[in-house]
Image 1 (cartoon, rainbow, N blue to C red):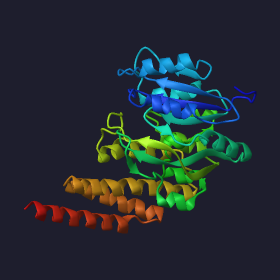
Image 2: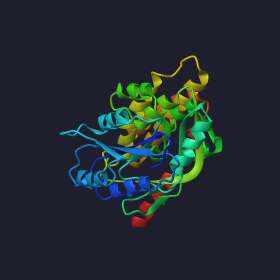
Image 3: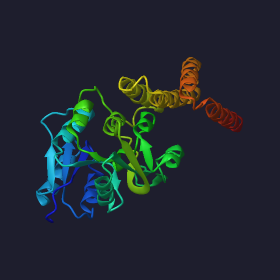
Image 4: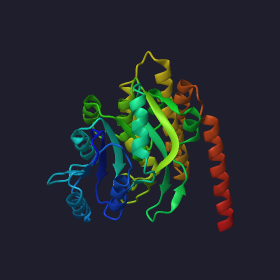
Amino acid sequence: MNKHPVKVSVALITYNHAPYIRQALDSVLMQKTDFPFEIVIGEDCSMDGTREIINKYRNKYPELIRIVTAENNVGATKNVIRTLESCQEKYIALLEGDDFWVDQHKLQRQVDFMEKHQDFNLCIDDCSVINERGNLVKKSRVPTEIKKKGPILNYSDLLYYTPPTVTVLFRNKREIIQRAGEVNNASDHFLFYVAAQKMKVYYNQVISAAHRQNSKSTYNPLSPSDKIQKHSLPNLNELSKMVDKSNRKEKKALAYGYAIAYANLFLFAYDAHSSNQMKSAFNNLIRYDLQSHKPLLPITLFRLFKRGVKRLYNREKAG
């Protein structure tokens, strides 16, 4: 342990991550920094042995690891908020128990940038996507549009784009966490927007982490359509309350977020053979397309055409 003041609290959120939690913790412990850091683990009464594993790590690294938990399960959102509230250092880095970092200089690199650039409040990287077995699904999780806009993003970009949680580091400001805690089922998207509001976001294209698609998580069991209806749209509704209605850039960015959601709902409804849902999603897509001035309708119809061709091909092949 060196003499530099502690600068980073790593907020590690976990629930039933026994097969993966060691890899997550080891990826933090491998970090090479010129400052100490702490690991604050939010453990929500796992039933698969996760608690026993992190207790062993805490006993081995008592100066590094603190565990935040309770006698009863509190749910994903409250677990996140209470963990963030327990983070006391200048910066907070986020990690979930089934994800892990692959860059041993992640914390050092992000902190160095934030120390030199006081007008930035959020620092993000890219990450790969893997499945439960650890096999690569996608090399990059960041969309091309964001890559082209980087490295400097505006907070309004976060009205329609959610950075990979596993890569995020932000300044620890109590009002950010308090504001997120006041919203029912506040998502990472909401937290990041609040953290970046009125300030800049730095995006580095380096692949610093791996995000795992975990079918046993509280989020992934939902169908793609349900994810949008139960998470994305309610989250956008909360963000809409914060948007400066006199700011055209913010209004258009929010409308673009809605358009993305309804474009995907339209295609998922087609996949589910639901004409009523297709009609509703299509009407909303047109509505928000007109407001965003970044029309998604042409590409959405092209994607629909490709789905239709594939459906006909599969039908003929089966017949």
